[in-house]
Image 1 (cartoon, rainbow, N blue to C red):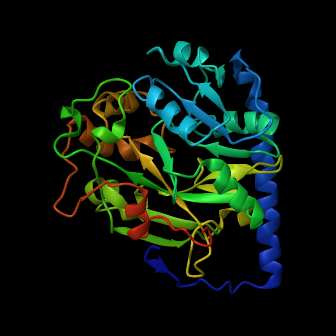
Image 2: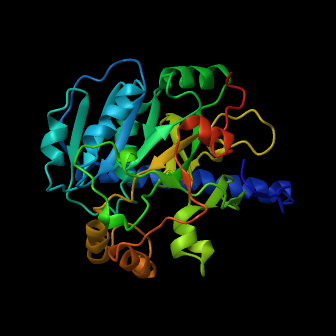
Image 3: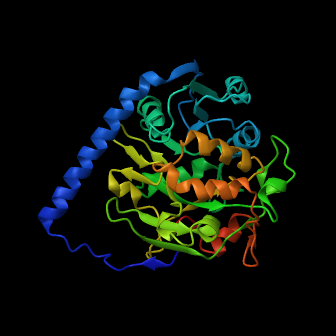
Length: 350
């Protein structure tokens, strides 16, 4: 699937060392759950609608995403999502009112720190603990559109049925940055429009992967942000592997966004040679024209990275409206194309 560094792949630690590591991860998971549940008082329920007994639930934290919301909701409704459980973190662009009017959305609001809540993960953990247990839960951002093999014809319920049959409780996806040709702030984009109508391009072959030394997930980096902004510090480029779809239990906890999850066996979601894993892609629509405005705001708010000062050059570059296109860029042509390129896999899902 990706160039995979197998150096050190075999665990050389003693049985005792492995047992100690597992013990530390169990306590880390318990601490994450405890801190998330303490933050439940930061959430104010705006509207709680009846949640269907069957079907995939979407969980999301967002702020000022009115331009994306109509298409984002439509995309997941088309995939057959049963209900949306959303935390609005202080929107002032109409997102809150719009979401409150949607018949399949339950909405909570908060003005608390997104960064202090582990970038919204603590808030969503509270909701998953209360409403997601025993259900397939899809955790995505408002700028992420999930596709998977056959997603144009097969709903999410077909995918989760396959995962259930094969005894898998999680599903992985590569976050794939889409971008326009020309300055990112010069694109003609109307609020509510399909972002894929203006974000046509992506990097197709500059990805690398290795096994994460702590959590065991396949740690994937690369893509356009690595190429454009982190060439001198590739180790700091964004993490692109995600485990967004999980059949939830009360003892589960995301560690960093949806990049890692505990217990660690849930991170085994990508094909590393066996050919049996189905995986997808999260089309990342970050690079719409409002990226310049959002980047300027983030330089002040400093809410999106652990060490925001390290990312000042990145945000400053985005404010200037760079052209991300290169002669090696590939024009997006659908999920079958991503499968041919090896960016997602069908595995044993016929």
